[in-house]
Length: 362
Length: 125
Image 1 (cartoon, rainbow over the protein chains, first blue to last red):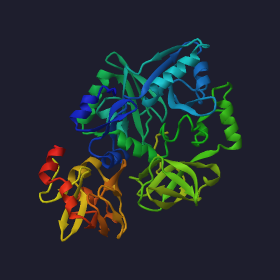
Image 2 (image 1 turned 60 degrees about the vertical axis):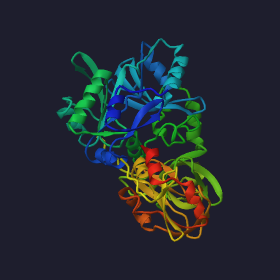
Image 3 (image 1 turned 60 degrees about the horizontal axis):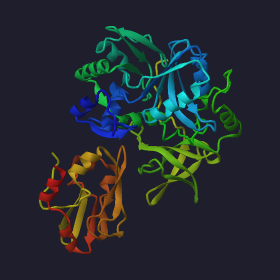
């Protein structure tokens, strides 16, 4: 039985195509993926991302604890800032990728993927014993909206009366809304400027209603995936997994090997960084209209050298594109490979995964 | 409300067939194109390829996913709709006008295994 977000009846009323994702019955599309994708690239769109999980870690060891289970450097983060990184297994495989909001010194909010909530909460609790911390699982309290696109700052101001021009990329603030404390961050998963809002279910529902009434395009998980894909952002389960380390996913930038403490997975990542991981995530441009989907084989001549993790006909970029995990030696830019798509094999070239340029407000 | 045209034969996997002089013209139904959303690629067979009834002869790709195309009747491909190579979205505009393949039927009796417009209409309501 799939869970429902606080906006489930709104999605049904809007005629959304609904489908299970991460244990929730979620909207895939309303008007259509292409139309919603373009609304976010060119104007603004709103996503229900209430399926995301939230875990609050506080107490005198909160920073030391999260720094032990997380690849980012939380101790060095200023309050009001956000770190992206991963929780890792000792072998460097990825438990989840997440955001850490520094609410205050030793008061941290971890935002985790819906599909991993149970696994992550168990993982976090299983390592908390040695630390003086309180782990509070708050996923059932928070609803979450993502307002994304170049017009998102104006939309927050004009429709929701939230003045957020002072926020820069990967910062947040708490705001008082009729006695309720909400969190607004300048973050997202689309490659565009945008905000994410965390609040009670009642507040999220009333904000959603106001945005829809103002004509903001409701956007489903379908275009959330095409948008993140075009700017090379990873999705846990595709580009990161228990088998795929952040080093293999070319996300080493988010693994702070130089932070002054040990963390789970550090040794494995240090070794992979020094020696090169066996596999490497690359971008592929397929020289045909055919589309390479998750799991399709990547070939170097006769030999299978990897598999596709995500593939689309680009919407903002009119090409057949894919991200693929391939053996490191064949993953250099410009390398000519092939992809098997059903019964045919098509030529493909290794290209940068940043198929489309991000537009963040730094 | 999806459009269903009288006089065509329909498969359970949402393909239609129009038969003239032993040649079947095959496409996907309005219901199917609506369920798929924006079609971005049609994977078509080659002329002279032979398929059995129900066999996968190609695929239609929407933004989100690939869906197999099943040939409703056995036969040999005699023509593919090359307009769909450059403009796969034609299927969304009119899935009955924009057919996918033409097939020389090997057994017209197989048409009896397909649905009439009336029956198909009742399955998608």
